[in-house]
Image 1 (tube, rainbow, N blue to C red):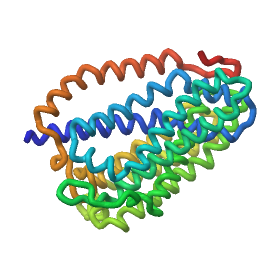
Image 2 (tube, one colour):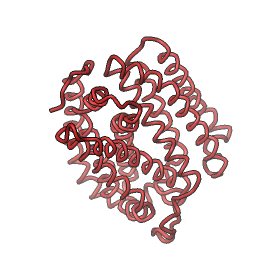
Image 3 (tube, rainbow, N blue to C red):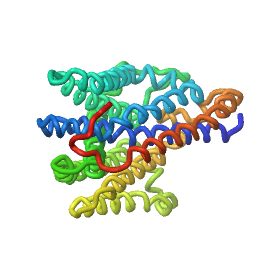
Image 4 (cartoon, rainbow, N blue to C red):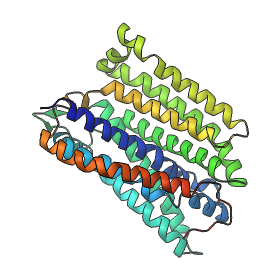
Length: 334
């Protein structure tokens, strides 16, 4: 087997997942913050700030899941039965969120049920993603490259904490996005909320960073052996610096930089998780090489991705550039 092909695909899937977390994270976060105002015009303004982007943001989830199925079929065959319940819960919640997004506008003025559905679908989807993340971090029971655990192995205090942390993290992204994209009472309230949410996000990052090496010696060895510590110490330091800079910018008149530094925190935390687990795709036993498809499959699909990925990136950049600028209170969704 060409050793580099699984590495390339692991990088592609990791990039797709990270892009999904950041891009869909802020519009899920906006929905999580929906109950913080009862003013209809403010809720309209919040939804309009993501109206051109939200469905395109989910493209990266498709690429990540599809890439896992094609490039690492053994991992896909283990992860799906291990997390059937949270995965199905997440997908149904995302569908519910999308339906609510569209139906809310056509159901006016009788749209309270869709406001509730928009909030509930987004919150449940975020929480389910945290459950899956926590379940992967704590490890999956595997025997002979098959899932050998129970249907509720993922349900532990650690995964519940991760679920709550992802909800808080997405809400932080949503609040800082509203600071950047809106004006008036919506932006002012979002700035106040972002201060509290940022603290919650940083606390969650610290707890996970302490819990995982304590519970898993392999992660402790990765981070705290002298040779690795010399190389890896900049990651937690940079995360702390980004947290401080985001906090400082939230107390000024800055609009874009709080969002940018919050994204940087997510990126650094994601890299930290990758460092903790690489090369294991199904911790703690199966690596990317153990679960990889045949090299011919990797090459065949990689050719298609080589053409499609630049198109997706161009389209994403084009949409964000086209709809740049502030969303005013009287803006409409079409």
